[in-house]
Image (cartoon, rainbow over all chains, first blue to last red; front, top):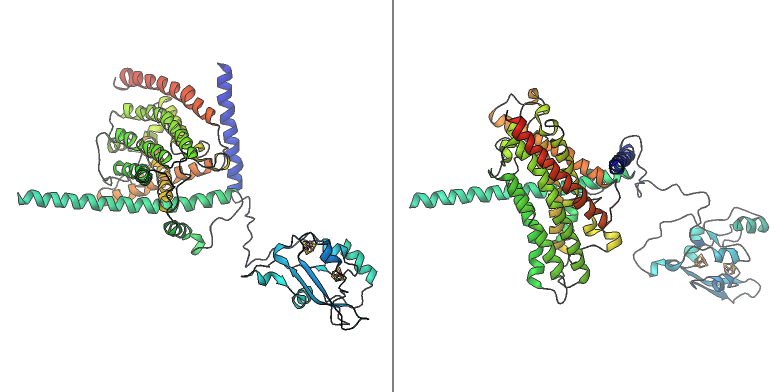
Length: 164
Length: 347
Ligand code: SF4
Ligand code: SF4
């Protein structure tokens, strides 16, 4: 009998405890954490790594990419296509470079493997668009998204900072 | 002869008008309740809840309802078409009919019945049939099992509910909701909840617990425990038919609040005489409507609070609670109340 009474008492106490927890949450003591997204942009963390882009070197007006294709081979999703521009054999550069971002999983392997360290993660996160084609980023768009590299960085520093 | 026809037409017109008023009230109440529930749960989880559609999101549930209206109405292959279509109405109409006897204020009862309490318990148990029919007609084993689960829950909890309802009826000596409310006039210490210790308090507690199970909200919402059981009897329903089930469920949570208010919290009586008790006529009707709504609102918010706090019980725990705890307690309580009424109250 006493165990039953104890059970009843315990269950009531635990119910009241639970109600207290939610009531505290409900009261003004706890502010809402909802982000009102389009008006209120999220605070991206320092280490945020978005889609891969090709930042432009201001001295040359294009990215450092040498169209080696390492990123295309490494990409587990097989979404990068690189074609070499064969007009000038001394100056290797891509004629065509596209990334189909719609399937990118932001693993960062392409940026990891790039010998020139020229693929950089962008801090942009609003990638939605109305068509599948719109998700295919070509060289021009990737350059634009990547912005400009800081003037005259040491290539080695470049590499190490991108591998951080 | 003509006089009779005119009287009949007038009476019919009055009934239709009342039916429409009650229906509109019910729809507005349900739309508000759904919105309020989402706000309360959001706030408890440190979110904002609906805040986009209309100012502060007040049009959210209207938009949701419009969306449900547009949805395709699918009837599964091999389903019993007629029963499948009738089932939502079988669940919805009883929960609508219950509103007929609820005294919303002094003189604001659609139809005052001298067997009001019995009417409520009789009418609201019809919805079990709707649930079984809906599950059976879906031609889906899952729905059928869900319907059985739901029916067993509803039927088990009907008993403690009635055992709890009988206690204030005995003490007040009437089944008429209006008379029960009038007996509780004159300040909150006259309310049934604060008299007749400990029988009425026990009955109140039983009504709250069993009522939660009867209207199928957490911790007793195994009827449609969506995460672990993939919904219940209403799995195959879509669009408007689903909306009717949904509507009935929310209407029932207001009904429970109204019944508890009427039987235990003084119904439409103001808590203190100076807060409107001295008024008469239309003014008192308005004030009493306010107090009734305020009490119901507090209860409904309490239901939402509990709903967003407690975890779900297992089906065996649910059955145990009803048959091993609530029903014996209710029977003992009934005996005590009878003794109290016979030997003490009428002395
Ligand atoms: S981040 Fe990963 S998935 Fe995306 S393009 Fe680079 S290698 Fe491919
Ligand atoms: S790995 Fe780097 S250098 Fe090679 S093709 Fe890709 S982006 Fe260009």
